[in-house]
Length: 369
Ligand code: F6R
Image (cartoon, rainbow, N blue to C red; front, side):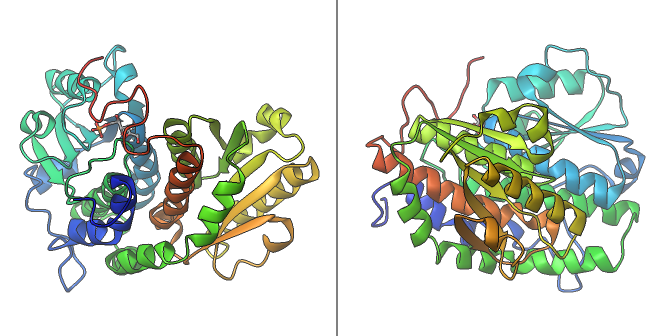
């Protein structure tokens, strides 16, 4: 049932192009507009929304962090993202005009469930993004957008994450469509790119051998750091989480702009630092800032592992290891940039002799607090 793979995780990583395509299927019509029939919150209600709040845990929370960039950029609606476990014990300010999005692969995560109950008590509408049909979180929500990743068996989330991102982009674009904000050439172009993105994920998968080889050489390290900016920051957090849970190594993700505010003190000779580089074609200022971050850490001895778009030559002089990903619009980059980090963590775990599908102390769905 592992389909010839040694681990479910490897199988699920390989299934990502299909999972992404399946999640898009039937949701973008040929004219480029979105049909999300399942979102049974009426367009007039969606036009009234004045705040989006995303609640989730773990990897799903990272999807939410990325969604914030997309939602605010495409819809101009303020968006907050919060760990469900924090949200539910605060006094969050919500009302009937807040849209709460609960993201959960299993649909059974206790903290996310409690957060959504809390939101509904305040009169907010809750939209679930979920991978498990008929699970508790979608049953208790006002509406649900299912991700079509198929069953995810490995404890570490991979294909569910990519499909959560796709669902978040769809919701953001749909909100933009319904509200008419910024609905123009940029959005049409993004929809086109999104509809082709599964091929790009496939291309990334075809080039992972050097990432595996690199991971094997790092099996004896104690720490790996991850840096990113903008949507690359949550990608860095996700890369670090994968490494912790699978390889049992110390791993931390940082916003690259925070380097000088502390983390740079961690840089010493030969510490591997993975840097997620934004597209040089998009907001080039983001790109240039991160290139200077790479220079800074390399000057202090870090071993730089740079994930950068094909054709980005500016990073070449500072990359000890260069991992190429296809060019995508800035906001969609996490769909391709996360894949090498999954492969990296999986290979490191294997090299360290760890149980990939069932990491110690972890459960696939956390139904207790
Ligand atoms: C990490 C991982 C966990 C889950 C988290 C939320 O690889 O799998 O962090 O993402 O426990 O689970 P769901 O999405 O089922 O609510």
